[in-house]
Image (cartoon, rainbow, N blue to C red; front, side):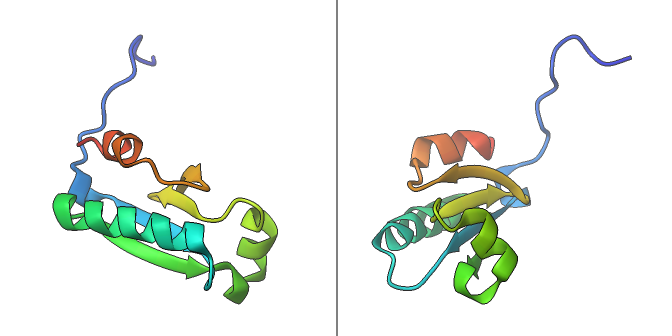
Length: 92
């Protein structure tokens, strides 16, 4: 039987992997990278960067949404990284 109320994750921010999907020469991607790296230094989560120009499937899926952020492989946001929203999603 499923619980009536959703359970909060027991993961700490450092237990997550944030993936930033973008491409070179993208000013929004640079802005997103700065936010993600700053929060990574503070909260300790791992960061992975992927280039849509190097992966046809990523390009097909995200070409008009970059930069895209994923948390543990699930899409979190696109176009802009809101530090407060990312921090909350990571449980900080």
